[in-house]
Image 1 (spheres, rainbow, N blue to C red):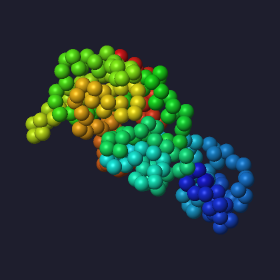
Image 2 (image 1 turned 45 degrees about the vertical axis):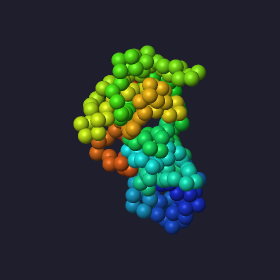
Image 3 (image 1 turned 60 degrees about the vertical axis):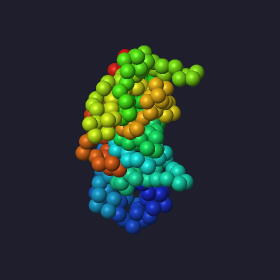
Image 4 (image 1 turned 135 degrees about the vertical axis):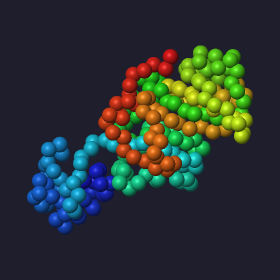
Length: 236
């Protein structure tokens, strides 16, 4: 009850004492009573609790929000989640910069997060990047072949021209990477003297950001969608 309702154990015990908890339609009184969460029906104040060992959330992160569990100054991705999705142990699986927007995956499943973040698992992350000038063929080749920045070797990326903004004269590209280094995409474009103006993550693996989610909105990811994230497809 504590994990599924995002309440303290003390509050969970209080609900038990008040008679608001039913197990298979029978009032439960003892906090240490053994149940099978897969087969027993538990309800609290008339609402059935569906037990989930872990939860996976898609958030459309807006600008100005920090990809962290807590922060002393700014709101975090956890802070802006709706109460119905909150539970203890949540964290963002991979960080987006404060001024970067788009698909942020939030979970309490550490093993899953490791598997999608590790470059060895080749789970691609897709972004739309806006820059001030067109990328040359030689620069495009640097992205595709992998590039050295200082003493760091960045793995090959996929880079594809999307559009030119007739009003601003800026150019949009789709870029896919399998790493998630600090300020990686910004550093890659800075290395070819073409600073990033806007950056949005649009997909993780084969799962795209739900276009129905406005900035700041979130929803739970289904099992079928979760499988799309971990599809084993090499970026090369």
